[in-house]
Amino acid sequence: MSELKDFYKGKILVLCVDRDDDLGVSTGIKSPVIGRESNLKAAIQFALVSPEDSDVNTMFSAIKLYDRLVNIVGKENCEIACITGLPEEGIEADVKISKELDDVLKIFKADSVILVSDGVSDESVVPIITSKVPIISVSRIVVQQSQSVEELYTIITRYIKRLVNDPNTRRVLLGIPSIIIILYSIFYLLGFINMFWIITGFIVGIVGLIKAFQIDKAIYESWENAQIIVASAALSLILMITGFYIGFLGVSLYLSHTQMQNVSTTALIGAFISERLSQPFSSTDLIIAGLIILMLGRLVTKFIKNIPGVMHTAWHEVVSISFLITLKLVIDTLGEILTQKTPFPSELLVPTILNRVALSFAITVVLTILFTSYERIQRIRSQK
Image (cartoon, rainbow, N blue to C red; front, side, top):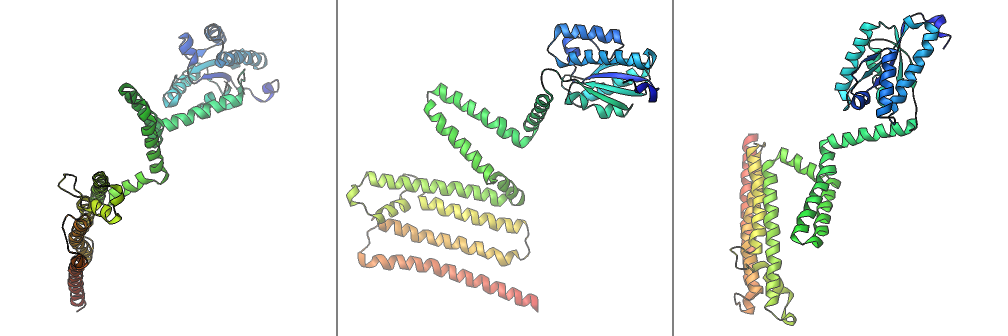
């Protein structure tokens, strides 16, 4: 320290920075605190209120360093000050520190600064200080907690704030535990606490599956590109799931009215196909309706987006819809025969089904020929 007097003749400011304003929160002392007596008084008061705070040691260390500098460069060339930020830190705290440093430099026009700090958080204000006056030294004060522990705490705090503030991670980090707590409370009040773990496992499993395969991203991108297709696909999925549900209920109902030893596989298939369960629609009605809605969604999307050559590709959906409608006639007939709701002589069973199948394929083939012929004629005209 004695070498400083030989090569540096300017004024030195010993600066203590308390970025989170522990001094003000604990004691109510307003900053900036300028001068040795004011800093000593503030440090003693701070120590009496909050002796475990590391900023107390920083203030006493700054006073000790100031006393050493006074003996080397003289009292007129040295001053000590303590400036503070805000409890929540951040940009607002840095703005306050910058303003208080300006106030200190108006009173003591320092040529350089020695920064006294207790860790990483306070040293983050170094760019603010250097923008106003050079820093010739940084004195870090390490107390009972080690430097690595404080840095680890700072890093963990920073990442927790980032996780909570990020919209994507916030939904998982806070949303799922909140849903689980609400479900637990509801099931506890209703007396179905045993069902809680089943529902919780289902929710966690669904969320994990969606995130693992990025299903939410795929649905969002699909919705942005083709809302009608996504909506029709969702409606189609609902109808098809309902159709399968009604079909399985039909099989269960059929089994409950029939002796197990006399039930054949064909009869069960017929029950799945044709059982309506006192509803207006059978399982196959809903399944085929779901497929038709999906085809209609694709067809409407092509016309709305005005895809080039839309008339040359739209016939695919038209033919598919026609085939599904005619196929429904075949399935209804097959279901009635298999469950023996409509008596057919054994010699007419196979011909009846084949006639319906032939009719379905004939309509499909005729439509395909008509559309492909129209497309070929249009292509020839365009070439001419």
